[in-house]
Length: 255
Image (tube, rainbow, N blue to C red):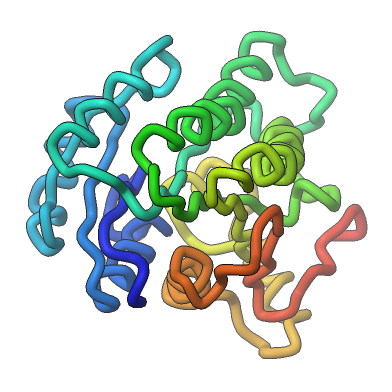
């Protein structure tokens, strides 16, 4: 991974999170990592895990607060200099609304879900220019529920669809600065966030049974694909939604 040296991981919550798997694969490929978490609670929660990585600096950045991303990125640039990559692994919605029918989504949760899960990525990319003067790669995480109806995914699916559209527009906006923008569409995997989706175990079973590889995607599958997109090996790829799901893109209303 010759061109990827130093980067930011946003959203690592515990050892089961996709962000943790990505961090492990990046470490194995020689990258230095800087972590961003939403609150002091999460900073304390991952402090021991972070010691396993080079730099292991943790910054608190509440992405819903105006100016928080800009302020944090300025601090990182001042301390560490130019950054090569950013991984955005942030999404949130009220788990009580990730069940039943989408039409019952409240206005407050719709706006909050879009703000955290989609707009925060736009703001990350906007501020990436300052800390990536030599170009780089920005990556976010999405899910196939943005394209097909997945039971109980509800408003999160709408946020992911908006996120994927944002990837294409942001790639176009940042291309002239040598910054690539892509997304990984990961198959269902057990994470803290996934636990909020109703009947998630059934989604895992459905996906596993219909996959050509006859298994669910793993944390490492996703992480290794992310390393590729963050490295110079994918220098000609931007504005893409890359599916990593063991070949199973069949979940729909017939679940």
